[in-house]
Image (cartoon, rainbow, N blue to C red):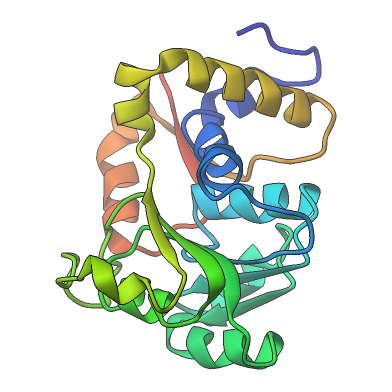
Length: 224
């Protein structure tokens, strides 16, 4: 993809896969409408920092984020969120902020029990979009059994997204999304949060930081 003059190579390196993923989650998968309430788990991570900004850019009425500690909450607050709370507070906060109605969209890549808790706070016609299962130290990453009939009375939906699978089945869609989001980046409508750039020889340190689950934003490796 051609880069605008104001996008340097470090920012370009941080672009895939977090920016196309965040955009596709909200636009192609959840079909975000202006004024809707969005709740985004792991708000301080790569996808989370982008999704908060993109939701705000697209006209979401309320954008809520969740994180694992107060340091991450302060960090994520810079990226489009109206409110950032800890995981064990999000159900109560979502109900309070929506006067009991619930949220329209939840983006989730943590796993159980966060997944089931997110389903419980969906508004009528709410959409839970799953794009991974990191487990984030919160419990069992695997799904609890769900019966399709249980969604009839609640008028809710579960949707899935995988940029890896999409790159195999419909790469032209990813290319289209990438072009649109690179334009947003060039116009400074969104920013990529690069928190550190390590040398290739420090790759093990980068992995150690990721495994510690204490990182925020995006880590890069410098090849040369």
